[in-house]
Length: 124
Image (cartoon, rainbow, N blue to C red; front, side, top):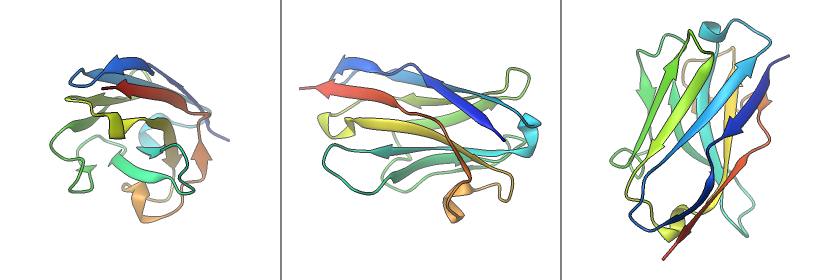
């Protein structure tokens, strides 16, 4: 079992930057593909934001997120980060950390492990 705990969410203004963190426990961290998803208010599905391979050598983004979002990881700290810049009101969502042992790019499957989420609210 993998336990994920997100932090770093909050209320920011449009144009601000924010860094989310997710600490993992329960398995060897470098074995885990890690990623971030988000669920906007009123939306049923979670949207893929970014993912990163176990070594950190490969990152994956949808085209819409590539310019403003950066995922990274520190395997010594069992932590994955999401740096978000130039935030917009439409970035308002609950951001979820996710992990899986089966793939480097966890957007290619439904991840086995999820955190509880952290709220990000961007005011205009």
